Length: 624
Image (cartoon, rainbow, N blue to C red; front, side, top):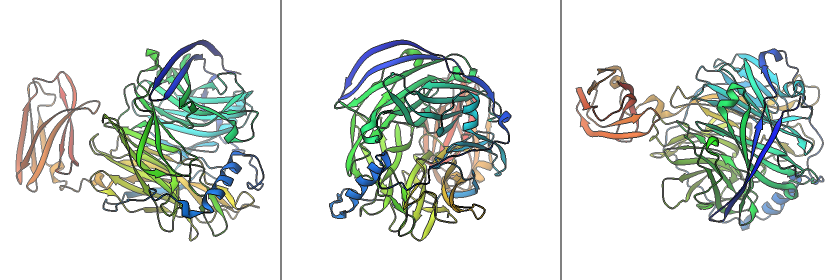
């Protein structure tokens, strides 16, 4: 059964701001293909078909183009720009490894990992092209082959590039995968769960992969949400071209009303097209997810010159209105300069003669909180010989934008495909957990993590998981490393992040390719989640009253030592209302009170922070 796609209108809205052009937005209304009960697909066969032929050289493909480009680039390391340097500091405490397990049996190539976790602790882990549901104790609850789902809906082409997210506001999941890779068969399959149980009912839609009817198919989805809408970006590829370089047409943004998707109604959607800089289409657009909270209406998108040997430019595009307001694409700044360069990464060595493909330097993951965008991607290290990752920061609250870019690298280990999630206790805790894949000639492919905080910089690399073998599935020297990895904050456990990544796996039961890959899932904690700046006695010995309150509020607490404390009041969406007081509390019993006559009725949070802005107490209070 094919989705009903109703073409409504073509809105010509030429917007030129600092050389970024967003010319066209096209409206679609799309009926659901079906309501499916995913647990009806029990005992999935998980069929996978992949080519084991030699990847290089020879074919006129995107991978071959990149391979030849890298051979040209890295044959002469002396031309590496000096500005590609690492200023990594190692003063922050290491992330805390809470648990982990090997998951997702060997399947498709590449192993595109992504992950989402609900407040109830249900983990949806996807890879190319399967879906697995676990609990936090590593018990497999359910598994699904996306090919089975697509076939049952009449989508007979291949399924690939799965992505998944959890909507903390609505307590629902959204699953996306692509189906087909030519203009006559190209679908962006979007599935909205009707409940917080991923084994239950989902509403399935198909966004057209060739919405302009110009011989394009859609590739490489990236997804995010705000309070009202769901966003998916894809790259349009010309069906008549065998090469990514010659076949790339443009990157587009789909904006969809998520509430309608959860309800199973006719989906209002809009595709934004013709996004350019200096008349050149911007390639790859990363939508920026929320950190602690979802943005109300705005969504930022990042891109860069991902094929360049060396560049310091990033592109920023934004949508500032909900779909219901009929938005047009806009931008505050088209080209933003970084303080150092990124560059096309070399393929990473897993032995002296075999490599893992790193693709390019596009932004792969990012979040925004308190106006700060943090983002990560692949790059090259300062010596120009090893694959590394970058971490960028952009403050959208500043009048003049720039990117603070750091290169995270190692003298021996090579890094790839990072992801990043916010780990703060409040919106003012500027900190994050960066997870990524690692490999070297002395260590099988596995997963690592680094903790970052504004106060203390970067932690040392935490080696979470070593593989049990090299990867040797495709003939020749170049294996796929996956095109992305997964990471998500667990929203009802501040400071907790669940991640998944790529590891080498020795499968003695395989008849041919014993050196395979698997997925590793881990639970990580911010070191600040232990709140070690003050003993826990402060949390354990306090009382507040009245709650709900009318005109006055009082907090009594015990402090085990003399300390500087900031008393802050936040609203229910995480916005700071006022810093009530900054004072030095004495050892022993203390009392703090304030008048609430200026507050409207509602829910608020009283937050106590120490002199390093680390949260030591956060309590919900209600004004009647």
